[in-house]
Image (cartoon, rainbow, N blue to C red; front, side, top):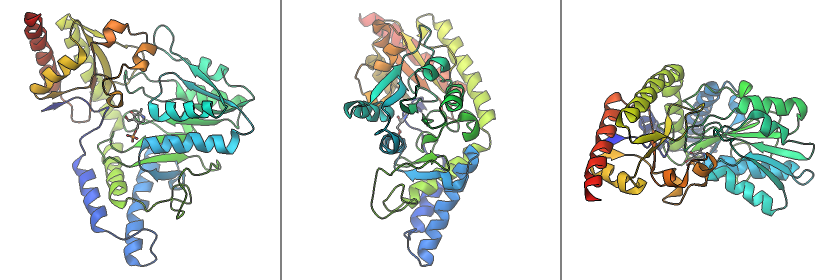
Length: 376
Ligand code: PLP
């Protein structure tokens, strides 16, 4: 099997699986006062510490959630409840994941003024364009680090730090889902008050994520109840999933730079193979994460090719996993022509991706080009 759909989800690593098992065996409720509870709480604390160390922040700044969707909803509605009644403007981009875009649409329905910054003709979102849209009336800026469809890296640090210099009270949120454990991310340099993370994109289990909340920033919770996670996220902690998340982070945080270098080499090979093929274009070649590449295969509809490749044991995506066949508004924002959008595939790497995988992918695409062309 050649699995190249890692931006949708990754295969859990052995460390994460062992972590989940450990969390199932230590079955106590972390809120219980007896030893079983304490043992479970220790596992949660250990995972929290691992994530905090990977980001260079305090363990008390990390809150576990059910995934990045919940983290971003908590961040966005929390910012609104804490400041949005007095201020009205939200600044974001047109290429955010729905986990950010939909809650912001909801703020617009609630009466906020939403400014959405589009990429320029080269597919680039400039830090200046984002920072310039912020005014005295702004309470939230939300901008992703790595786009999940093209791999574009956004100038988050530059934009957020410029914004905070002029407007220290503006709350900055960053969806770091596709950048975490792939690019070196430190909370101090990123300048985000709130950061959304997801475990299943970093070889951890599904259904768990985290929200970084900068110490000193107070936002109300989305879920209320028993007061877990220092009242930020009520509900009994999923110890197995949290433990699996923590173990994945421990496993991968040691060699982020080394893996990035390796991914760059794989990305170069992918570009080279596309060029050699002659019928494949790269949709976005600006500043990008090597882990995600959007390509277009001339004349072959994405879904037809996706299923053809699937039959050969090769798994890719026709866009982003959650758009399930729907035309992607995000690709249009990158000025990818409508025709090319219909023939787009997303290739995304994991730490396990090899050169052989990419050669296998290209053989599959070439076979499809000759076979399907013959049928035309
Ligand atoms: N943000 C980005 C950029 C993503 O790629 C995804 C997942 O597809 C999410 C947010 C949502 O993450 P989760 O599945 O943990 O809710």
